[in-house]
Each structure stands twice: as C-alpha cells, then as structure tokens.
Length: 338
Image (cartoon, rainbow, N blue to C red):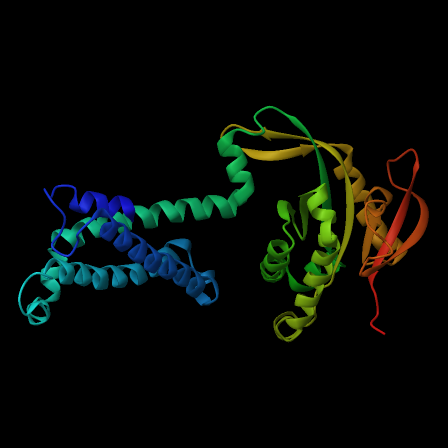
C-alpha cells in the first residue's frame, strides 16, 4: 500500500491538498493497508468456513476478489473525497459524483491495478504454502537444504484405525471424503502445537518438529489427544454422514536425519534416515499391544515423566519387524482427573 501511495502521487510537484507532509501520506498508507489486510483476512475466513471451500479454487478466488473490489470502490470514493478537500462545499460536490466518475478516476484505475496484482500474488503464495508447507516453501526459497544437512527431528505417524475395513464398507469415493474431513480437523492441532506436515500416506500422515520444539510443553503428545478430542466433538457429523466416528492411532520417534531438497520439476524437502522406518514399525505395534499412542525410548527419555500431564507406561522390549535388536516401547494415555 505504501508503494501504491508513492506511485499515485509521485507525478505531483507537491503534496495533495489534504496532505501537509510525507507523514500524512504514510498515515494514509497505513490506514488503508490495515483496512485491506482485515478485508483479506475476512474474505479468507468466509471462504474457508463455508460451502465455497469445496468449490474449485478459481471460484473462491473470484469471491475473495469481489469482496476486495467492493472495498476498492469504497476506498476509491474516499480518495476522491480527499482530493476535493480544498473545494468549498466539498461534501455536496462529492455526492454529485456518481459511480461512473469513480470508476474512471485516476485513483481508482491505479488502485485496481494494485488490487489485482496483490490479490493474484497473495493467491499464488497462499496456494504454494498450502501445497508444500509455509516453512518448507521458505526453506526451498532460501536454499537451506540444497546441500544435505544433518538434523535432529521428532516424528509422529498418525494413522486411521481399521482403515481397510472402513474403505471396503464406504467405497473409494466416500472413504476419500472421510479422509478429507478428518485431515481438515487436524489443521488446528497442528497449528496449535507448532508441527509441520511432512507427507500424507493415504489414511495416514507424517508430522515432524525440531526435537526441542516437539518435546517442549509435550507438544507432540498434546497434538494427538487434541485431535482425538476434536473428532469426538464432531461425532454427530461423522455418525450422520458415515455411520461411525473415526479413530486414529499414532507412534512417535526421534533421532538424527539427513534433510535435503530432492527433485527438479517438483521439488520437496525429504528426510533420509532409519528413524522413519522405525516409526512405521512402532505404529504397527499399536494394534498388537492395544495402545492408542506408542512412543520410543528415545522420545520417552526426553520427556519429564514426573511433571507430565500424561501417563507414560513402560511396555517392555519388543522385536520390531525387520529390526535385529529389540526396542523398548512406551504407551501414553491421558491422566484421569481425580
């Protein structure tokens, strides 16, 4: 908006009639920018929490554009009000100007170009962020992982219970709708606990944190139980639409990984380590040991069990598929309120 204000008045020898200094222009830029920032947020809110969300993206982009266009016409009129500030009876003169006058004014033409440019640019950035993840997009842009790096990462593999039986019962189309509904509800716990989505695998999803961030305040554990609670809150919706409430089981493991950007035409940040293989094997043990959430000993050792909000139970040593040595496993449940 500051750039727009600059170009709008750059051809003038002096300041507009209503402006006495650069500060007046800066205040205008700040106020109008704040208004449009709020309107942009509001347009996203309307689209994301209405039936428009399920329509093609071009439709949602059009709806957002209409909202901002209405605001542009209003602000275009405001600009004309400012330009008529020095005229006597400028209030009466302003109302004599019709909408056609606003549409053909220099202010509105420049403002509309600015609006279209910003809206398309924001739409592109938003979609790129949704496709590859905001942090991942930033890391690709700055070239952080163009050369492989060693990192310590904490992973969670979240998977739907009895998914094979459910898929056969619902059919492919309804099952895909179920997955969409579930993972849409996952967004809030992921954001609340600072997690990043690594990859979707059918009815499962890999999440990850920097180890310290995931362990801090037990974010990795809170995410799982918050997600389950949200599913219960929406139980009426799931029972009406699918006939049951979906349940998820999960496993958590951490360790050293090599992080690198792979691909040319479609780039993504990938993790290379035995940590992910072990994580999948851990998750397989949930059904065998009748546990909702299993964590590895490497994860359990980093948690403060005495101050924890959860019961962390030692399940003993277990031989994981494809592993030569046994691994100590821990089951996690929420503490019952006394």
